[in-house]
Image (cartoon, rainbow, N blue to C red; front, side, top):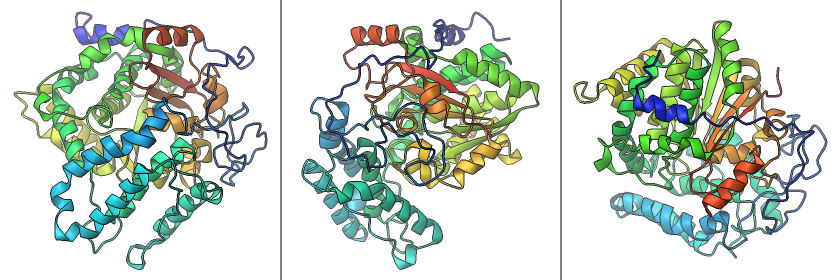
Length: 497
């Protein structure tokens, strides 16, 4: 058992002081608390299926859908909303400007002349986002073409077709579509898949991700000291999940990393406010499911990863606990297939994180170094696996999960942790659900396996939250939906095998 005198244990334990009843679909009624001032989108679009009751998803699959009528998606047309500010200003003026500054030396070199021109064209589109219409991606060039690239291009054509056909702009098309499209366009500008160019496999966010990795150690050291000693029971998984949840607060697209903070523990300050910042907590349901997996010898558990940097370290800590506690016999990390959303993690980022921690000075960071060595062993023995898939960087709602990914998760996966805000938005189709709509009827009914969503709120969207907690959050913070202060732990049974 973990010593009760441990300060971190006490801080994390506070996160589970709130215990709320799960709202059933029969008890749920709309509270009309959604901002309905967004432009309505044609019913032909990918994401808008209000009133849809058939069993065929909009991507043409037979995937299950949410039990409730699907509302309209969020667009970026309403001044004063986070979506509007993101697409009309923040993506260009903050994210791409910071990216330009990070890679300026490369962009100014002769080898990057074409890349710089295409990068500036993308920024030009975003600077006129209200009037500039969306366009299709360029088809893969002959030297970069393959069955995988052609499939990915066809999927993006399918995503974009409804909005291009109705001449949507960067603001009038659904926010999720345009935000993912920014990063896919950036990859095209770089020539990410062009083997004979300077941009081949070039990660424009590498500097920021490495800064996040370097600065993660100070907060990770005291946290990683506790992971091996967490109790192997319901309390232990709740604590491990809480650490992974609040690690999502450390997002490089919102709070750029500072390598000077490598020895500073900032995470404990985040955990200290956890008790007042959970808006719904299904940790007890998650724990019961994990107990069943442990009792049967361990299951196959996936972690759908969000950010590199400190958040990824907390995901690795969760995965370490899952294996060491007997909940999982194998943990599979579902990772992005190309750089996106600044800090989102690829397989190379995960492997670099493991190597970095394994090679730390054991005298200075003994617990972090020991964790890194343990993680390397898990990878070497096949107890941890890494998988990249194009689906994780596309704007499909998760009920439109593509093949063969969905069939694999149906057949293999006993539990999936879905991390972060962008992944959570996709769970909801980035649609304007009532905040109290039951997670079980929005997500739990269609997801391919049992699912636990760990999310700190960074977008004006949500479901499954307790009405009294929502009211309290609104009173405490005008920006409660977008600044990462508040979080949720949701659990759903999944559509089943």
